[in-house]
Structure formats: C-alpha cells, structure tokens
Length: 350
Figure 1: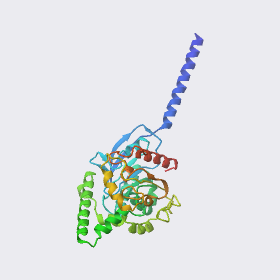
Figure 2: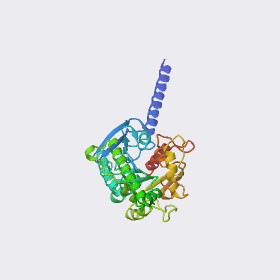
Figure 3: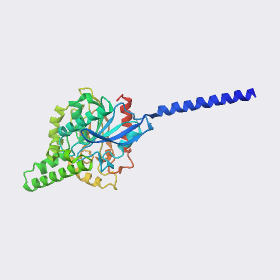
Figure 4: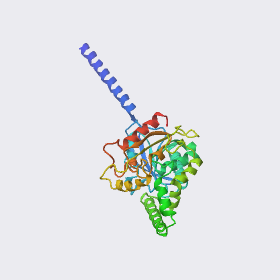
C-alpha cells in the first residue's frame, strides 16, 4: 500500500512539474494583450480590436504607428484598412498598433505637422516615450519630417515604397498638366487637381474625421513635394541615410541624429490579373522611362537606410496588401514582410 502511495505521489509530482513547465513554455511564446487603434483627429484614437493571447514574435518595445500615403485613409467606413490586414498581423504578433489619418492630399510638411499631433497623443495615452513609424509612399516622407523635427519621439522609421528621390509620375503630371503651357493640358490639370482634392475630402469623411475638423487638401502641394526636383530641397532640409547617387545604395542605416531607417519596395506593375488597380499602375509605370518601378515610384528612389529588398514582385498597392490582398502568388505575402519587420525591430530593441 505504501509503495502504491509513493508511486502515486511520484506520478502526481511529475504531472505537476510537467504542467508548470508547459505553462512556462506558453508564457515565453505569448505576450501581454495587444491592441489596434485608429486615430481620426489630433486627440482622438479609438480601439478597434484587442487580442488577449498573442505571439510575442513581433512584440516591439514601442507602438507601431502606420502612416498612409497619397489619397490614403486609416480605416475607411469603419471596415477597410488602408494597410489591409497589416494591423491585425502586427497585433497578433504582440505589437500595439495605431493607424493615423492626415490630409489625403497635401505636402509632407503639412501632413507631418498633423501627424506629430497624433504621435504626441499616442505617446501620452500609452506612456511610451517613442513610436516606430511605418510609412507607405508619401507616408515615408511624412515620417522623415517627424524624425527630423521631433527625433525624441521616434524609435525607428520604416519607409515602404516611398519616393525619397522623387517620383517620375509626379514629374510627368507637373510638366504636362499642372504647369503646362498648353491651355488644354492646363485645364485638364485643373480638373484633375479639383477631382483629387474632392477624393481627399471624401477620404477624410469616410475615415471618421469630424466635419468641423476636415483637413486641408492641396494637389499642388502634393505634386510639389514629390517631384524629383522638389525632393532635392526636401532631402537637404530633412537629412536621412540616402544614397549619394540616384541609383546607388545607402552607405548608412541611421540618420545623422541616430534614428535607424529601413525600407523595402517592389518593381512590378501587373502582379495579379484579378486586381483592376494593376492595369492603372501599368499605365502610370510608363512614366519611369524603363527604370524598374512599382507603377508610381522606381526602386532607385525608394532606397533609404537598411534596404530590406527593393525588388519584390509587387506594385505600389501590393506593398500595403491592396487591393484586398490581391498580390502575386509567386512572391512573399506582403503581410509576412511586415511581420518579419516587427520582429527585426523587436530584436533591435525598438
């Protein structure tokens, strides 16, 4: 009888040790709860989703702040994320995520000031001293503005498909429409500008921006921010680890103020025949004079800091997993790129 009791005690003890070990293993693979917020005004961020049990793979020290590009939004009509599926992917891997909203159509300095107010609010409500900025397209330029004027607020900058040396598509629009000497072309430019600004206002409203706080829209300001010539002045004013030549590689991964930069981009226009936006990008891609591009920005212009890759088989919208996740089945899933980047930032202490 005594032997049976001893054996039972040994088995019970072993089971208890095993259970404790399993709990310990679980605690190392899971992190505290993480959340996803959208910000539609300088002092207004709303929680959209919260995960209690998450992987700790991408549990960054500082919040991940997503910055949209030209004609962008945060969460359209409370359902469609600009970074499609990205907030959920980052949150599931342990990061707190904020999707910001600035003027859909304006200069990076105007948008940057709007973004700074939101970052100040985000750090205030989270208690975090800094944020990890992830900017798509013009959002990467807006992030550079913040990293220069408020470096104490920025842990890192990740630029996705951003025109750091300008966009030849913007050059084309500027030369042949907005600033054209031909009356017909100039009229077309004015119609285009008004239409784009109207879309910008619509994006504001559908993003939940209060009607009494609608943001200024200016097509002219946007174009004058993203041309090849205008980016020369921008780069001098907001220094970052850029190549010294147009198609060179960056010689540094950090800006002069010590902020680390990362970047990635694609070089394809048509990646999924089911995606109607691919055909539009195939047309705009013709303005790049044979340089590999994603339909709006060529890969030489996107290089900054640590270049993760500048030749994904993705177009300009694929890099934010749009439209609705329709990207090439033969290339890395865009969501995987964001997930790995979060882990990279975590491993670097950001």
